[in-house]
Image (cartoon, rainbow, N blue to C red; front, top):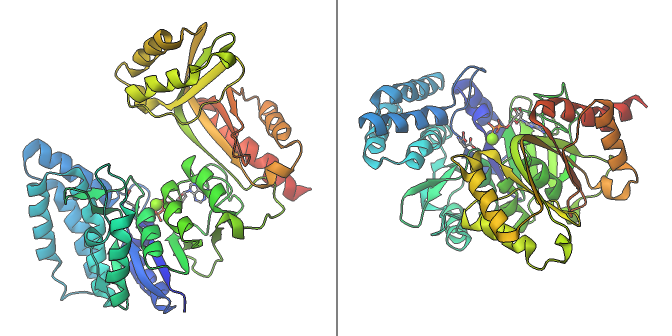
Length: 445
Ligand code: ADP
Ligand code: ASP
Ligand code: MG
């Protein structure tokens, strides 16, 4: 029997009742031997995720040297979960006291934030009667803060091979100095993928609050179509561009092990969900476009210089300026005499934009420099686009019919992706215009 690693997101674990659903799912299939869990998420839309409460505790501890007032809300959440689960004999008070002491002592944002996953995993392991395996003992980061495969995988394999069933907290591991370090937000998806690869699972199930990967963000389009099967490549493009149902980096560990991912809905477990397959196992379906996703708040630095194409080293000099200032770029569309740098605006505060422009002028003497800010990027993704004539024309016509001004186009070399840059203000309309062009019209015809 091929084993299954299940990751449950915060939305699936927000309170005791939800954890009971999770228990039912895990017990329904003996192949589900390992559960990776997030911290409790929101119970209702105005609620605060436990991870956010914990970042608040860290700030309070920094300002006053004591996090007890802020930690009181975290206590309440876990005490009510334990009571909803009917675990009277589970001594949550002592575990919470110890956690609070450590937060005050460690004075680390990552340590503090990681306690949501730690506490939830302790409770869920006790409820299920499964072993608790701390992520700090099996997931490691190297000196550069990157996941350390060589160190982690043998430990995951060795530790988990021994136990029948285990609950492992997501989101964190141990850094090269022995301190707790977290992945970026939403990182329990990465932990689940790492565990799946470490135990050579047959399937990585990612349980959340939607019945699969949808063709568009459901907060922007009403009831978007569900994607039945999607390739790792398409998923990476969509999740990187903001379809945050799955963390964009969670694809790498399972991809290396050829392990499929299934997105499932904790609240409707009978729904088929979305199957995410390695590209070689993926067969194209009839759709031209698989999905659409986007993000706001980019800045574009547009450079023009006659004969740029024949000036050897032009791009390298421009990119060196970014490197010297430790600024990463998202895209770099170029023409014969033009080159644009697309950068997240949050990386350009405190005079960074002016510094970059001055240094680029000094390095390559462009004829013309223009800055576009408050730009949103929208990616239209699908393997079907490569073989289908006129896809770009349809996309651009849909945007022009909606009166949306395209500020930038990047038809990436991956050939499965067309990215348009538009004003932030047009973002929602742009996503909807593309969605209705490629999905609802198709249905109507
Ligand atoms: P979890 O708590 O399980 O980790 P997340 O909140 O991280 O869940 O991700 C699930 C949410 O992602 C959904 O509730 C949905 O609002 C949002 N989302 C954004 N884009 C998409 C998409 N294309 N398909 C499905 N969900 C999406
Ligand atoms: N709890 C963490 C967060 O809110 C990690 C996760 O949920 O995946 O970002
Ligand atoms: Mg998530």
